[in-house]
Image 1 (cartoon, rainbow, N blue to C red):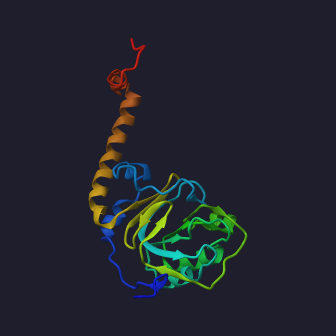
Image 2 (spheres, rainbow, N blue to C red):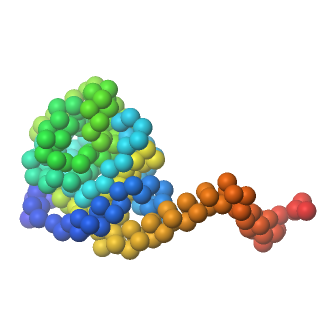
Image 3 (cartoon, rainbow, N blue to C red):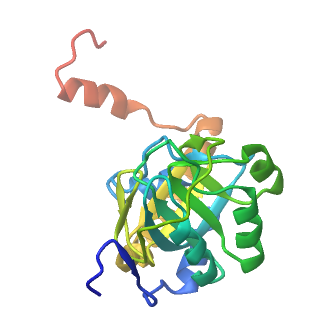
Length: 227
């Protein structure tokens, strides 16, 4: 595959569906915390949907010129149900990479959503149809269909590397990327954090939340003025 910059990879490894489904209902902050807080996309990539969105799936990656969506159209035809199309458009805000019609088509294909490092358009229509889309913002300026681009190669999206088959979890807080080889371990740890937080919430309302650690930490760091 010598045509670097204009190529398609047809096959890649996906994580077991049971593991992917296990991330449903787990908030992105809990997942990010167990990965060293290093695999959360930049805050600028956020939902264009109504509050309450939560989507999980396998990354189907696209790298495209900032003003072009030819390879995104090809990706829609190739992606499998449950995939999330993750698009590296270099973060440029000049031209929308996709809009309402592409969301309707993706929905009929069973595609789980889009993550775009760039803008989209038809924001109101997308929000109303409740199809998961995360992007840097909106622009009425449409894209070209000339290429080049790549499908299912390593990309960068929101300053995080994304490979095809990595697990994507996105909600109102943002987007996290779970490397596919670490997905099972991350899932176990994220579930443990979720359970721990529920215990803390119960302790808060029962008056049992131990707060001694705050002053202990301040003393260790040499803070003056503690009682």
